[in-house]
Length: 319
Image 1 (cartoon, rainbow, N blue to C red):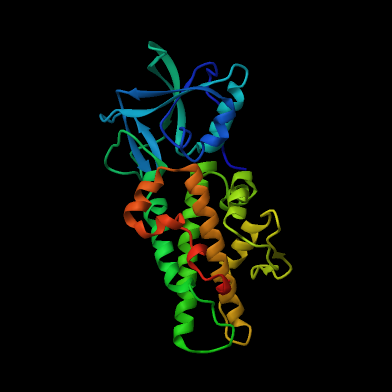
Image 2: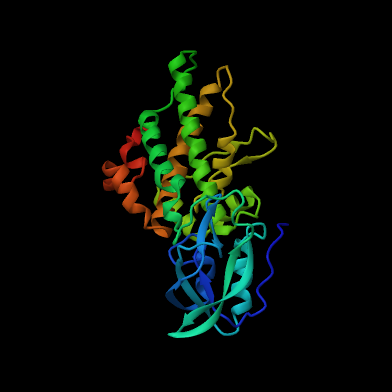
């Protein structure tokens, strides 16, 4: 079990949020049911540093901090703060109280202060933070799509061959797929908290009803079982409702190309998994983080007509 924070002493106080819990950020959906009021607010003192993609409040900063004041429903405050503590890792944060204008009047609020914010973090201070500025989600996804389009447009050959070009294509697909997984794991760290094991966060995303809807909207079809090379007794398939998709796509991540008559079946699986995971995750990001659209439009203007998906530009017979 991860070592989680305890809720703050004063549960009756609102929370000043500047990170993943803000509206429009990856973790806010976990809190939405407890929030009865949001109010744009600013801390005049302090500043933000960034460590491993996470914003940390540094009281020695001079930039000020813009964020959102979250007021929780009466009687649900403990549930709300417990949820925040599941996302905010103890190694990064601790609770503090600070003065802030609440309803136009000076008042006290709870805030997450960075733990050792000067260690292993950016040298500069920032006044605001958004997951939409994360390079992996902004530019990494564009790189995945651009790289993938070069190699997914036509089917992967099923006839065995030792031509170097076929192996080059296999490894290009695998490289794009691994970068895509890096973006998925960055998102789950922000959405569910970096203290939780990576695969636990991955399965949680796969079980999210909103993500399941994106799997279906992306046109992901039920699949045959994908064997897991790490454990030959296990295999996963994608079901009609999108269940099993993340398990199946994770198994495809660990395929290791091998010589022989069946080697190119792995290329077929990686290609299909790349298309399906990319499009499902892309739709999920569009739904949860619409601020990313501006960057994607700038770096990949030609993809907007198809919502930056791969499947619409791949011939149907190629799937």
